[in-house]
Length: 631
Image (cartoon, rainbow, N blue to C red; front, side):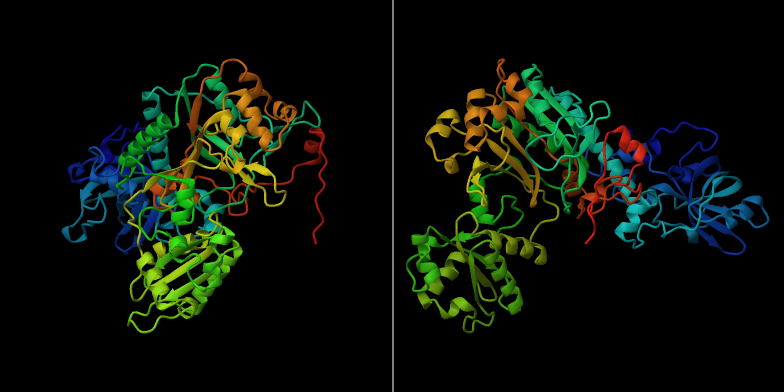
């Protein structure tokens, strides 16, 4: 791997022999041949100046400063800095290059030859790595000309996302996106290098497979040879990687494409995404945690300047939901939800607090720093959010001037009760205290939403910290609100804690699973589990969720049959490539680390997909289209 920008290999050809961004004062007097895009023009009458820009090349696969000997120049390149790719050309009037370049539009591609000269001292540009020199052009070849651009191809130009997606190739030329793609390439190289060195075998699993009855909606592919039958694109290589374990592959990985027909979110791309798929035979949950922490540590240290303390803290699902109102907590700041059931439950005259224990409810509270002067609408929004999850929300405001407390609770609690609430929450003058009363599974949720918003509003989270954590001990089952039957709450192929005995002796709601998530800064990066590899345990686990043995055998025939032939205990995980890169690159949206993403409504504006196909194509696939009528 090259250590500096100008050390990157370049095979000379008829278009170029050196990179634009590689020229320095040491090259003064040299004859050079370069190629690139016209990034800018400045006609000063007596002279024409043109900025010639390199494409993003292999030199972009460098580490950032401070990560093992990389140069400041390489760091500038990776941090979204065009300084490493631009050199200034100078042309004199009357010469052919002057006439040619002056009539070309920006973003035309050219090959130029000329002599490297020193810039006059008063024109040296310290903002460019090539700022001490310029190239006097002696000849130019127009490789292609550009039409009028739909938007300025400048790093700082403000362009709407729909336009950027429609002209994604021009968006790449602006620099930051292409440089993030270069970082993505380096990321994948590191993953492969690290995992191969740890004894993992890279195996490609099928992209055409069978539809799964679990999970999100499948993307279906009609079969031409078998009328009325369909392949499905894999939502994940779940069953294949488990079958590899049965087949004797001890450690497997792949950077796997996955396809799910689901809605877009800021941290989830509709349609397709990539994950680092891992599985290990004769392995426990602890083995998975150790490997992931090693892998992530390598990626963070070599691809970012952020801190990521190890070992990662562990929170049970129940603890995370209670203390942070979510199973995806941002641990870069405190503001934990506190439980006041013992302090206030049954001990006040306020009905919602007094009746909480008898109704199996809990009382949770959150300190909101500096929120005493927030408008009433802010508190009403919190109250509505609490209602939305069947809890009762209320609040207490503590003015900064230490005058009389305000808010609904100030009128319903005694001074001693208010004092207990203030002390338990840690509130001080100027703060507000928000409370929720309801079931333990949902009482902290509205408070967690407020906590996350306050973290952003008040800048509480350290931007240079990656606070990874493990969420463990997920419940195996949850009640379906519509049917009142038991459903799997997570991965149905997980091993229940306690095995068959737990399934037979415990209430399903009390059974925990060997399931885990890795979370960072409020973003879930992956789910994983110790797999259920024993047919008798699998049969009982699925029976609780309403699956007969016949349905189980026919829904998952490959796994069911394979597990009859000595399967090893195994465990795995599949961290999302796109989500992890989004965090490493400090990007607010996952589309910023994907070359050609769909938009928010799952359309490809560049290629025009999805699109109708011809009647002949449909006939070949034995299909008819029944488009619903509008309105």
